[in-house]
Length: 335
Figure 1: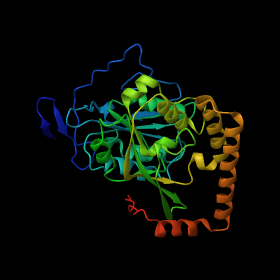
Figure 2 (figure 1 turned 90 degrees about the vertical axis):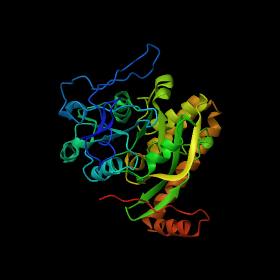
Figure 3 (figure 1 turned 180 degrees about the horizontal axis):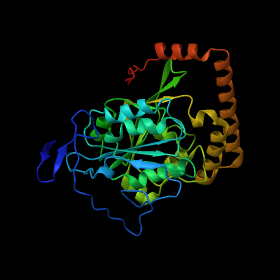
């Protein structure tokens, strides 16, 4: 172990990984105010159905939110995600930025997920495997466990670009929500780059949470994910933040890679319907206007599914990728 900062007792467990380059044996002091809508805790309270927990915190190692090295916290929620989880973990622990806190919330997996998590236990700050009440509940557990200044959430079948966290840190202080572009993969063989824009949020879901980093202070002020929604909970949160005047900062680089076979893709109709309800509740627009837009989105998705069935979507991706005037960023791959 190598001492990096004598005054703060920061040292290096392993220089190889972003999550083990700056640790401390000094347990952080957690301060929760009565008005905070999200509280912070280092460990989740015990539950009867808990399968296991572990990580660096359980070994007495913690992270520090340093002045010149802000701590980035990352959450992965997973349930039976053995197929791609290792790639997701690799994309976090192999970041070029070196003050990273990693939290994994497992919903009580019955496949090989726990074996993969245990394999990387020495690079994960805290992980727990237990039942939950859905994706929003798992997200919110992770947020409560984060001690970093900025928080990102990456799905168990997606992965970050290797310099993603450096790009976020370079823009910290400019906004409370920092986001970038993402590569959207179809059938693990071809991708299309998406360019989200926050100003379009009142119209539709134009941003996906894996490419978004949010300040912990914003969660404390405005709350976390609503348990009412099962698919579009990230849209509700981002639109709520936008409507409350939160500052969004866009990075014109690819931050994440997202696969097309996630939960929101398999239940796309439910997600679109939830978006429709969310817009009605938050925007307060006319019912007919929002319903027409909902129908148009459904039709557009059905056409896309027909193209996939006819094996034409790859062709469309190829044309857009090769003839778009915007230069594409080659994705970083792990494993």
